[in-house]
Image 1: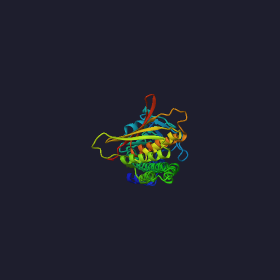
Image 2: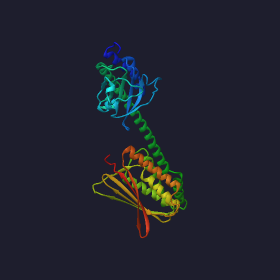
Image 3: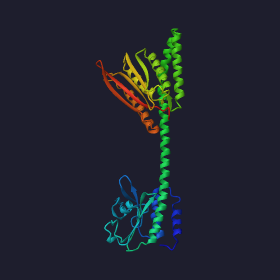
Image 4: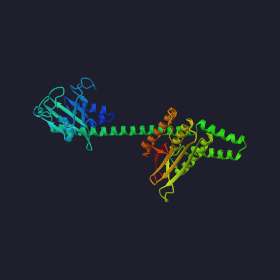
Length: 388
């Protein structure tokens, strides 16, 4: 070892690692400096692969790497195997003065008679192992062990910092992408709600009442249409909506759709509270309407005349359910690509809300029979966010 103080060598290692911002550079720098500063002839650094429970050679200096940052014979050692694997499990550094007498010794590129092995640990978290060998017996000393243990600690702190920064950047990048996806979904939902067919057909229906001089009906439907548009625009920047406002919105929407499709369907909306003390309930916004848009457009495209929708809301302190029952259409063409795509987008929206907000929204379809008719019931379970 060079004739330098313990402190001087540690300062050298610390300064050398100062500008390193990724693990690869850190490990190769430590391996190189173990040779140049400690007068070792061979140094290999293993990194723990937690999933596979193995130590993987990631950096080396000496015969293992005739070219810079290129390993010869990329060795992997299972945890507990060999001297290196044993140190990784125990967390206790070891000096082997004569490897020929240690049955744990694993030959790499050639046999060497001395070995020193130190875990790279930070607060009991194992990152890897520094393993150095020498062709002479009894080469490594207690001073070597003290020095290499301190170097391993510096290395561990640096790796911990790099991984923490990377995890933070990854988290920020993921959140940014999620926010983009959420905004895109909201815009798609708004675009769906205000799609030209719905808007223009609703206005044309209102215009019909005006030109036929049925002013009461014209005013009624124009008022409904304006309330619905204001509701959509108001909800665009919000994550939750009052259940009672959502039910009003749904009634307005279905009323306009009935007008648009010449009363081709009918519906009933009911609300059950599981407690008289339940005064308020809030649910995620832009969920129920998108579902009903898919249901109505699909039914009307297939010309399901006389279709009846029974819509039952049930509000509890922790959740809100909505069950939509309608007679099943058994025609072969009842699932359109547009409908399937719309439902898939809607389900993607639910999955994103569950992932980002932790809502645990559930959606299932139940089938039953009534007087020989097959009834499909879509059951949507939403969280009651009033207390959130």
